[in-house]
Image (cartoon, rainbow, N blue to C red; front, side, top):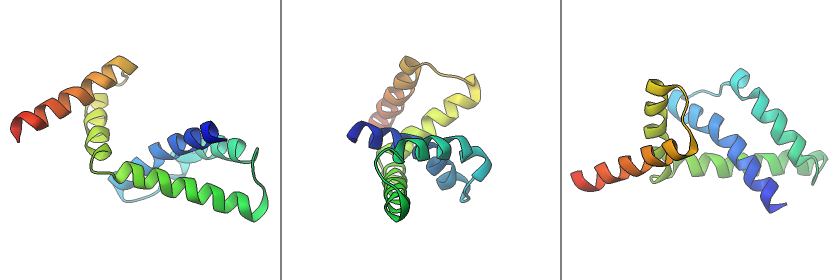
Length: 107
């Protein structure tokens, strides 16, 4: 179940980041994520517990995205995606590493 919870939080993270940036929830953009979340969460819970479980994991994703460590990383990756449209895992790691290196040097 722990792995599924991590996957659900990861699925919520994209829509949560968009909401934090735009100050609105993009229902259309989040639809695929929400469908995946429901499929995973239904394996463990049903009824009222299911809704509360999903809400709890959504809150965890929102808190994670809002973290003062994570949010600058999200902004750096988003800026890189504007220029490149796609990033590999290694390119994403490099963007984050470069952002922190620059931040440390300017401190």
